[in-house]
Image (cartoon, rainbow, N blue to C red; front, side):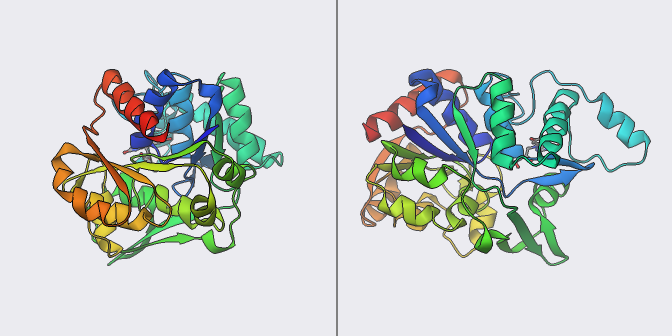
Length: 307
Ligand code: FO1
């Protein structure tokens, strides 16, 4: 069993490569859920859905989220009703949120609802939300605290960030199977996801970081940064707000207590001595994943590191 810790878009690319290289049954994927929100009365779990759609072959790869070829008729009508529609929920995507919300109202946990959705979509890989408890990334700006989706989608990561926090995380518990998947894994792979808002919340769930430190499995991470900028999204801005150096080195430093190897881009090869000085082995390659061939090639290199 290999265990993967991931957020949405960047992680989905590596996971797409991994399932083309190894048996999808042998993977356990632990997803960030601190981006989750309730909109139009529906429970939305963006990272879990991005991963689930990727595994089901439904994902909109160009966009990085949602279902390929989806339509937006329901959203148009919600707009006619005067509802706020900055979060683009497609018609088929809405079916996922309707069913998840229904299952959770019937008493299923988020993990159980995710399992039901995955089974219905024919997904063989085990996808586990990091926690069944509500954890919410909050972004402190000059105009007050906003949710991650308000910052990321509504305000297009323009506001200056003062601090990022994970509301509810201190009392959260890892979802059933999360700690076991880390402790008993043959390898743990940390995806090239935002270290502050995707991997950060998973690490902050009590017990997860300790399990990563204690596992006998090799732990490998792929950098989501090239130079001082994230390949996609605002990771560099959020890292700076949290007092981290916005670079692959800054990420390596943040993970150094549990990491064995770190994969960085050729453009960051000059950081190799600094990262190695943290006690990590450093693998330099191309970390861009613009095509399926690149996703597979990077996945193969990561698998070679853990094997
Ligand atoms: N990201 C956007 O940039 N704009 C959207 O309108 C949007 C809608 C959306 C709907 C469902 C879903 O599962 C994800 C969606 N995302 C959207 C992506 C998502 O908000 C972020 O990529 C993740 O939260 C960051 O990991």
